Amino acid sequence: MSVAGRKLLRKISWTDMTNHLINRGSSEHGYFFREKLGCYYATLCGSLIILLTVVMVVFITMKGLAAFTGKHPLSVLEFLGSSHWQPDDTVPHFGALNFILGSVSVSGLAVLLSAPLAIAAAILIAIIAPGPGEYFFRPVLEMFTGIPSVVYGWVGLSLLVPWIRIHFGGLGFSLLAGSLVLALMILPTITTLATDALVALPDSYREGSYALGATRWQTIYRILIPAARSRILIGVTLGITRAFGEALAVQMVIGNTIRIPDSLLNPMCTLTSIITMDMGNTVMGSAWNNALWSMALLLLLITFGLILLIKKLGNQDLEGNNSHA
Image (cartoon, rainbow, N blue to C red; front, side):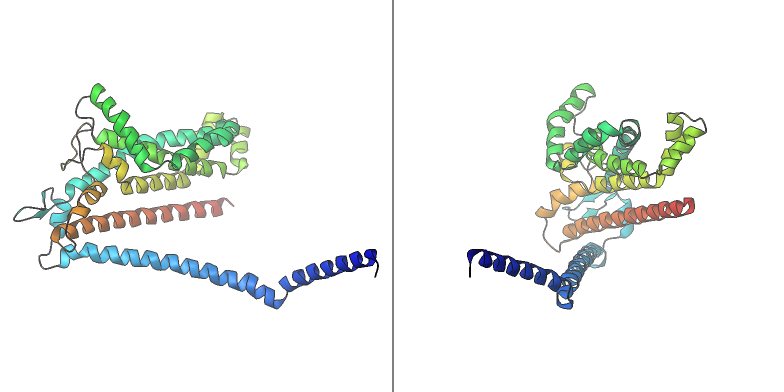
């Protein structure tokens, strides 16, 4: 056979093999491995995630309830309503009110500081300057989202705490310092979700408002913000969730003093900070250790409550979109 004939035969063989592989992919055998196997793998991964979540919730629930069901059960009323925390006394007391109010105070103040700035930034990115917002502001927000918590805490410890001590007095370690650090940490989350909410609005809302003679600012605060309110509130709620669960950054700047927060400039303690400080120094199964697990269970219940709130807001937004459609 000539050289040209061998090349032609090799070309035909390669073409037949390629067609065979393509046809095999569309056959019943190929369909099983491409579709069924992928479906089984996705189902396995999803089931594993659900199983891990259920196991974690059951474990924390069992450990958290041990303080109220053991040999010397702790009173729920004392745990939630007392500020007397003396776990190493002869007669120990495990009142968690100091830490509950501390977490509520630092998270609430952080959201109050962060939410208006986040919504204003979202308006800038989505409506006023969409070009620079998409190519400059969004990448900056994503960069802030990826910064570890310890970096925020270290910056707050090195710069914010001395600044508060010099200009406002006190030790610098305070509710104000913790709230400012948390506000900076949750700002990208709220801004990103608020921006997505405004971008997702139909153009007809803005065009109809302009057609009726409204100015841009009237369109923003009378039409666009109310229309995206549910999704914006979802972002704020997610910010609160992260603020409640943050431990390291807050612990570095808040002072970790067991007291009811009565001033912006006084040190205090939160649920997450007392858990991280004391959990490694207690004996597993002791009353002190069980009380810390009860705090973890309380944090879990608060998180579940916020998740249900997010779900409710999301359903309201979906019903609103369906009614407009």
